[in-house]
Length: 228
Ligand code: HEM
Ligand code: HEM
Image (cartoon, rainbow, N blue to C red; front, side, top):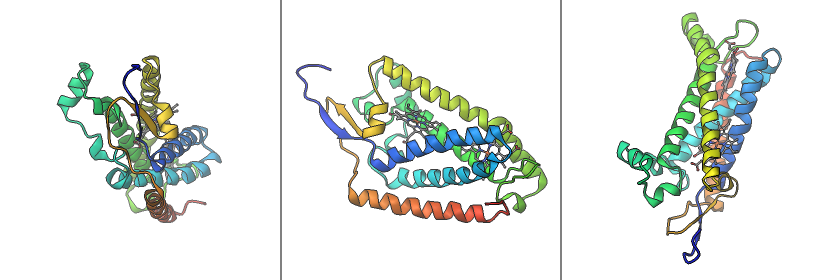
């Protein structure tokens, strides 16, 4: 921090994005635990799985209409930006929302989470539990989805989450705390940057979007014969 530059406090992560993140952390951790435990815990695996579905649907819509820095358009970077950032020639605005490298990891996590949830909906443990959409597809498709879900997707996600945590610790060592802003929403910047909208109207809109996503996820869950 230089002494003679004044710092601006800018709202970067709106409340809906922050709540999305920490709810996702809780649900995905729960998914890993209940998935590995199997048995009766699978009842919760399916319940939590539908919560992750609702959260991901919400994040996709929020990526289009959410706060300035939560929008996908704010963190879709071309190869030149990524290369320049890696060479240490990034632009100041790369430090506001997700950086070019951070963005790549965010898209990878969201993409593989979607694949995990998508395959889960068509998975069957051949004991007692099956995803709600298994009865709409062939046995071959169910086998393929279960194989991806149980043997590939979970490891890819584990690797991505470990990488995510490693990156956060790496930045912490370089005196950049990314966790604080994901908790309270603000960053202190030594240049002017637009803030993300985060007021009663935008938060209410987020709640309504989440309610619609939860209703959709609940409807998907009701398509199966799974014991709920
Ligand atoms: C972030 C989301 C998810 C994660 C991290 C996750 C993780 C896991 C893990 C670790 C297993 C155990 C695999 C093994 O036996 O080694 C599993 C199994 C299973 N999951 Fe998920 N899961 C997710 C979402 C879902 C969803 C949304 C559903 C369905 C609604 C689902 C349905 C199942 C089923 C039916 C199995 C048993 C499959 C089998 O053993 O072949 N999962 N999951
Ligand atoms: C299951 C574990 C986790 C998953 C799946 C996960 C997933 C994500 C995702 C999808 C984002 C992008 C947020 C958005 O724009 O919507 C993100 C960002 C972030 N996560 Fe996590 N996360 C996990 C655990 C954690 C933990 C344990 C911490 C802190 C101790 C953390 C700290 C952060 C921070 C600081 C950001 C913002 C990064 C930036 O400034 O670019 N995450 N995470």
